[in-house]
Image 1 (cartoon, rainbow, N blue to C red):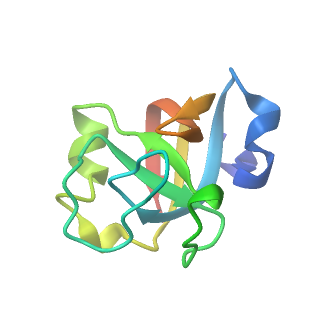
Image 2: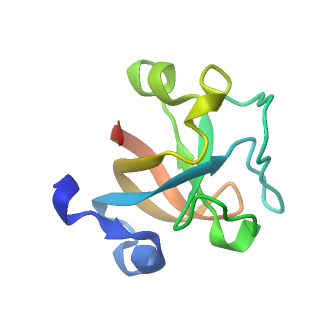
Length: 113
């Protein structure tokens, strides 16, 4: 449940499992070596989350897939750049590699604080 969401520092322990994860939305347009931390954003299909809202090190950011439909319509930074720095809970499958680092793909649920 959201109440038992794991912190991002423990993400690798849950590889291959579907879990709730908590963090902060820190950016978008994620690639293997960068994250864009300010708008405008161009990629609606994903975002980056981190343990702290001001995180700016790519190695401490995790890619989160935003599947087309309801989740992407509500969470895309292209449409909602004001979501930056907001706390978020996402439920999805932990993968060792998504956009160049560990991440969540696919996401099946998401909640903003």
